[in-house]
Image (cartoon, rainbow, N blue to C red; front, side, top):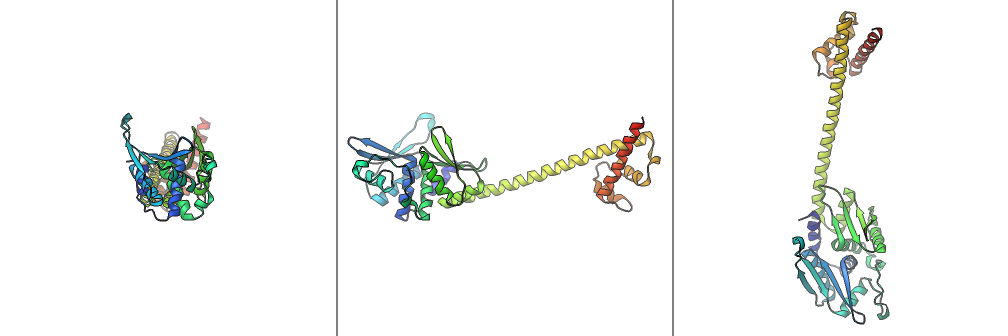
Length: 317
């Protein structure tokens, strides 16, 4: 099961308490995945479709709790490519369907304006902070997804209405987050890509188990990345040390084969002999072998003098 499905299953098991929050959650689900079926003279039915059985049960429970009406649930087997079942939740009662759509602000009140669809989120639905959280939760259940955090950090909400995407992004950003909107084919995608902000939004919608799992993965990835950085840094430093050592040995052997060590001052002769004996030693280690000991910068200064001497000898040839 994907990380996204596990998160939605957790959210679907959360208790449905306050009516205002339940309506806010339902309002989001209606806008994200609801379908209005029109038949005859302004006769409407409300339908919801999902591939997640837990979400289907939650929609059913919210409808029964608030409206205490008959709700039909159908399961359709998708034979193509052995995909999951499709769950269809249908409110057949015309008056109840109309009341639901009016309560969630999806259609205007009044019989003459029944088909005036409104994707904009009514302010009275989300005036309380708890209702904002519920709306974002409903939007995630109705049209959201989250990537496997072991691969990448990405959480998104897909809606087919531009105004709704802007409203949803504003609600999310009211929690000090930074969601953005991008167009994908004919849909508007509200998304968050930063791991820390995805943790925050999971906390907002109540997916605490998913939050802990994501945090564990984030910590593990951070440790792994830090180890890789340390190893890469040490490898780079080791490569530099080896390259410098090879260059120093080449210079020393050039002097040895031309003018000989007798031409070198005592300080340069000592460091040259140590380098030939300890080819893999660092500058600091070589400095500690001298009597008296010399610091890293002092050893480096002596090798620069040897290098300059080699350049002068080559010019004379």
